[in-house]
Image (cartoon, rainbow, N blue to C red; front, side):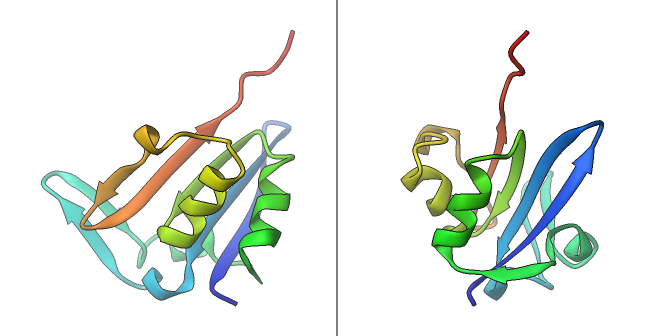
Length: 103
């Protein structure tokens, strides 16, 4: 499985953290911006999944933190974000998604 995904619940919100398995255990940087997948590996690491499984989980989440081409690509394919929302950190795509709660 090329993606690891972890479901978090914080303040009643469903948060998905996912990363491509190929980038876990490494540290990337672009200037002062750092994506530390050594230190924060436990935040992302959980169940193993494919793109389809991640897309399904993203459909019902309140927010997501995604790292890697496959993980970020799943959100773009699902039309949950646009390509202009992606930042590159040391050549690794990173995307955060937040949904506003309806009142």
